[in-house]
Image (tube, rainbow, N blue to C red):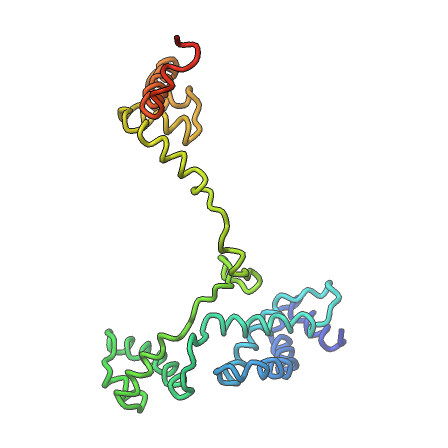
Length: 253
């Protein structure tokens, strides 16, 4: 690593020298600008992308570990790109919107927030038009087009991180566990209908919740032996309703 970079990083991390941190930011802003230009054709202003990339650079400087033995450039580059990509993911346009409307829409976001704070209420269309210097028709069109902002990607994982991307095909067509037992439930339903409320509750606790007879006895407030009898009786009633041709079962004759 460049001796100057190492000295600045050490001063910042070990001594809390924020002037050293600022020097590092200035030294690597050319890297930020270079990376930001790669994404300048996607409908965002280059200056905005540079500011966003600078956030990634600052995070890289703050998180850098001098003991890693890697160049700051190597460590900062994925952080800068990741910050820019995250911005497009969170603030991208779902459909192609003219640049003028995009800019007016972004301006309106700031103006709405500002005027809401001043007025204590949401501003009207004429007030927004006056504040932005646009016509009321342009304001309405820009507000309507803003609905195309921030689409949800099918490839974003549950945590929302860039590193947690999913292939949409991986989440489609999987075998649902509940489907496996749906047929069993359909078969058991007639038998469950003939049970009284306490019997259904005991069956649920024993076979759905997995409680032991002792646990069920404590929860309901009866003896374990009574629970055993109720389970046996409930199963016999359900079996008779579901498959009466089985009679009382083997050994009961």
